[in-house]
Image (cartoon, rainbow, N blue to C red):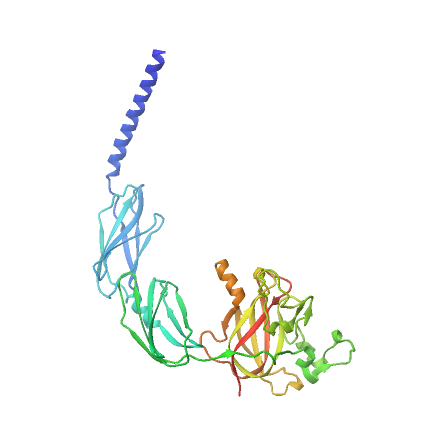
Length: 423
């Protein structure tokens, strides 16, 4: 028993000695700094740039670190990954020389001797973004657009003076291309100015955009809307020889156009769906079950032709889905809008058609936003890059191009148009 006890003590002593030796060895190794970065080059960008380098041969090398000071005197530290051979710096507010120290860092936080590089960045990111900033009139709104190719986090400060008040709006962005709508404005002149600031204290001067008056539109009354059936679509070019409507077609010389991807309507009625429900001003608040929708009865692409009953000009539209659970089934995801103002529809409105645009419904990121969009509809500006009205027209073609999962049919609950009646 005593012998066994002695063996245990000797084993523990050897273990403690081994651990002590290892710790002593590791401690000695911990104090050894890695070699410096080499072959350093710098490429300037707006407000900063990036370094390329060769990492040292040390096995315990972990990352590179850059240290520099901004115009405000703040010391900034930027690091890279162990797998990277480049390092980005940002936040510089002038086109002048800056000294940047580059370190190689190992797993034990030992740093190499610094490599000091004197660099000159391009104009500050805030200045470059302000140069691309544009603010112009939208419908009951003003639109703010900006380019920020480096996706630098910045704040946009917009001041509006008008209608007896002054308001400051602040928006944060790190998008390469930003588009912001300041909505709920009256159709009165607003004096608009803006400036941009970043997270490093760099700030531009205020830029004036002069007087901007928002455009006005309104929801168009749908009482005069009607389905432009195929025989009405072709006028006197329709062949009524067959007694059965389902077998009738356009006259021979026009049959080539009578295809699903051209001048032909999808099913007027299929199951409980009917095209007239597309503009009856009714949507179903039940998120799971709706009977208020059209059912194409055919695969994509397909079209419906609508007579608005009078000449209008449109600015926006809202599209309402069949039900909340239809994001992945049946719902039309992408559509095209075409318009015509043929003054002689009795001989077939086959001319004067103008393609207006393609519009895609995108599913919001959260369930709450999804439910809200289902209830309020997906809104599209007809000319998103240049808010304005279409030319006057009477006839509209809604062409469904794509759904969410390559389904065989398409459904939608409602279309609402905004604009103005042509007097």
